[in-house]
Image (tube, rainbow, N blue to C red):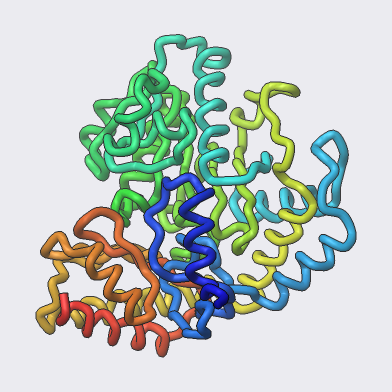
Length: 400
């Protein structure tokens, strides 16, 4: 008798894939819009979007068409040569972000890693301050490569891999006095997320970002913003820093940029564009024609379908419905976030149990820590989808 597909895949995964992920007992085989489908044809409402990646939904026809067209034409040449999609995408990203140059890579960690390299060389060569510091925020997450990990101020990620790179200093988030006291001539840069994702969906206040910009100008330091999770329309603007009306020196992007296709980028302006010279950084796959065509299609979809406005409106509705749920007695301490990047702080350490129960009810979300649920659905979701998700959560809270 032939084994069910789920059993076959689970056995192969257990035997051959490095066990660094906590797999859930679901096998997804297809996606469409805001829905995922398992091998038995069951539909799941996706409020995770591949961890804030599939912003335009699963298998959007325009994105699929552009990927197929480019795959039939040219997929890879290396960065020794010019390709049109890369140049076109660099132009669009600079126009949308206010930056001047783009470097393409393959992930958010790589994008942050480039920001760290720029800051370190800036301190050594431009500021001529070998005894420099890069300021970061407590609870931050910038990636798992060694440079990005050294800037990730969470012990659970750092401890197994020490010693880390020196020169990073943690500050309490949203503490203006601590921020002002930390800056000095030794400060090379401050690296922060406008909304901390893996840290529990903690928005950084607009006035904090504005003060960071002012202090960077005063002390000739770089403002590096990690928009890997918050960027590309998730908060109702192209980039979350735009809510504060500031302009960073370096911006790291990935996740939503490719709509599911792997691509990252480090965007920069001003002196940050002059730090790295030919041969000092590079990548084989970064900015290949296939990935760049996918990203261009994502930008077109966001513009054509008014997804920035939808993220703002439906995100506000989502937060309002969750607050209503709290008023009915659900174990919710706080609802926070911006647009469709929402965190639900629970009154009890039951976030992982809620996540698993919700999955059984065919709602996909996830837990960041013991007490926080993360909801980062596709930007295409509707108020009807929100109502369905809240109905599931209502039932799950009663069970848990």
